[in-house]
Amino acid sequence: MAGNPNHGRLYYRCKASRDFVRQHDIAHPPVLYLREDTITQPVDRFLRDELAGDTLTATLRGLADAHYRAELARHQGADQTRRLRQRIEDCDTKIKRYRAALDAGGDPVLIASWISETSTERDNATAALRLSAVPPQRLNEGQITAIVDGLGSLLTVLRDADPRDKAELYSRIGLRMTYQPGLETLKAEVVSDDFGRVLNVCPRGDNSP
Image (cartoon, rainbow, N blue to C red; front, side, top):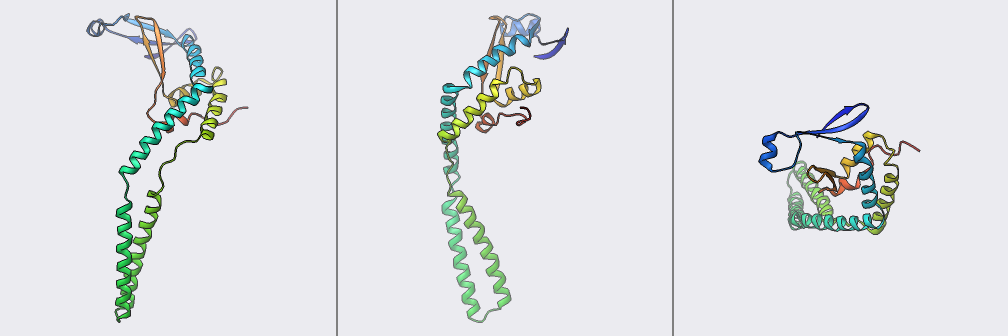
């Protein structure tokens, strides 16, 4: 739907050709207008009901569990522990061999460069092993409570928020609205596959009292 200002109010306009309506067997007038101020109040009430208190806590727990399982599976699938440990062992073996060559009278400058290069490779593998050994962490109850409190404060001012901030908030939480003309009903859902996107909801930071 496209925005269409008219007499100081914003409407959303949706056109549908007769062929499209007939092909998809839907009830849709040639031009449909939906006034914005008839949408925002019930949608904001829906958000306050769904994204506050016990309902939001239960939703976040489910999201946190699903996100943790997905990240854990990704972590286990990309586990490089064995390969990195083997690389470290190979570097240790090379360094011992280089030192033995040095003790046997080899070129000290050349051997020192070999040892330095292999030591750098070993350090990089050790750092990568340290990172790969840390599994993903699930949100704890304290973090979930903090998110619930933050969203609750944000939603209390949603009604009077700047339209640009409100639009960005709707986008960030994954708000999806579908108008069903036959039923004259607007369906509102919060849909997002990105857990971080759901949690990062504050559009401009704390810029107002």
